[in-house]
Length: 188
Length: 262
Length: 53
Image: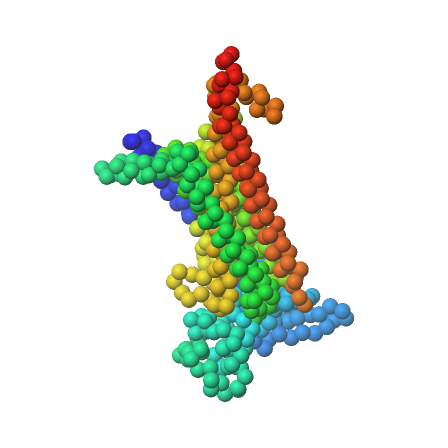
């Protein structure tokens, strides 16, 4: 009986110690665990041009310029975290999810005239909605995907494809009133 | 502190009610169909719904359907390891024999589901992110979980004396449980390529309900299926240990050779 | 561009793993059950038949 109790306390103590050790270690290494740096971090202290960094942020709306040099497409776009923006130059085919307003991670090096990416990864957010619902939100002016994340989930996550289609069909959308409650701040 | 011994003892008696193999086998046989058939029904319904009837995502298109496999697998990978940790406490503190047998059986099933999670994640990441694999915190911590499972599988079978294997594996399972909160919160604590959780306890799910329902259904199905497979394997293990003790008992020595020859 | 191969591979993998695990468990359970039944039933016959022990 007492042996079992002692064993229980021993196990609990070991788990607590281990948890504390792991937490401290993670705290110490947390800057290395980060997968990407933000544009404001790069702006504050630019990494040396020989070091490969991953730059993460949102593609600024209207900043994407595509051109072709022979066969290879070249894209230029600004990546921002809301405070600073860095211009990225990338040679190659961008991933399917790439668009203005999308979060991306660009792998490459920082030069004087901007960031030269050797790889661009698209980072999608945790928002899952049918195409039709997204269209309806865009049409009603609640959301423009180029400028930020969608409005609060409660305002659309129960909207069905049928509701969305109803909203889309008549441009003024007088019928679908109950399904799309007018959320006050279309915040981003 | 004075109350703990009785509590510990009472918990022990409760756990040991089902340490009796006969009682466990009887209960397990009764429980099995209630796990197996709903598991099959819910998994097929959830995956069928997800594959054919749920809408395509606004940015990911049809690739979002991989979610209905990936997310339940990811949840179960963690939940299975949590099960291992519970078994480890039962084994270390109360020396519960069934907890050891269950730990032996959870390991391979959990490793398979973790491998499924990693593989479907890769298959999802390639078309969406543009890469099969990145070393971000979420992906790496799940890979660590996979190796913890493999280590547990190896360790629990590594000793000639099974009791020593049970002890060592239980310690590994408990130590490895540190990885579970890291997996869960990796997407909040650090910048990762993996997106944060869509379903949280605190906020509304940032997922259309037309996708949430099939996901919930297949998660339920996967969980029941995991439980059903672990239960079936544990029942088989209990029977096998009974067979071994029957074969090695001195009363049966005479028929032992005949049984082996057959 | 369609991502159908990735989707099908995911579902196929899930099916293969689920099938392997469940069939394996079922076969193992069945084997253990029949073996145990065979061992437990003829107890009285063997105790009578082996007077040497």
